[in-house]
Image 1 (spheres, rainbow, N blue to C red):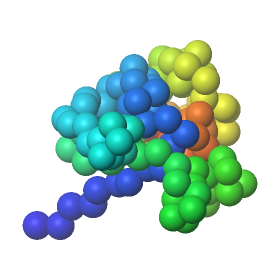
Image 2: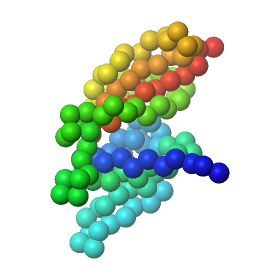
Image 3: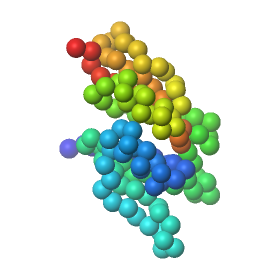
Amino acid sequence: MTQIAVHLVVDDPARAATWLIDTLGARETGRYEQPDGTLLAVQMLLGDTPLAVAGEMPDAGLRTPASMGGSPAAFHVTVDDVDAAWSRALERGATAFKEPYDAPWGERTAQFLDPSGHRWAINRAIA
């Protein structure tokens, strides 16, 4: 079996984990601290996809998309209500990238940048 796991570099792992829980319905599965007690990463699941949400460490080359001027990649997440998820994201500090619309391939879709600059596309098949 092949499964992809995502490692997101964020400004603040605790805040980003809360944002993912409140905005996209992720759930926390564990936390890892460094020897000095600093939070290293929050393990999460978004649907069946494992996420590691870890803090920026520029000296090790780990930087957020926002600090590098953006990212060419987008994470696509199926949601029950694109417009409601879009509103939640913007209320919680996301930046609009592409407003909700009905795409010609049969989905309602939208895109936003989370507070660390990761681009998320939210989708739902049009019935």
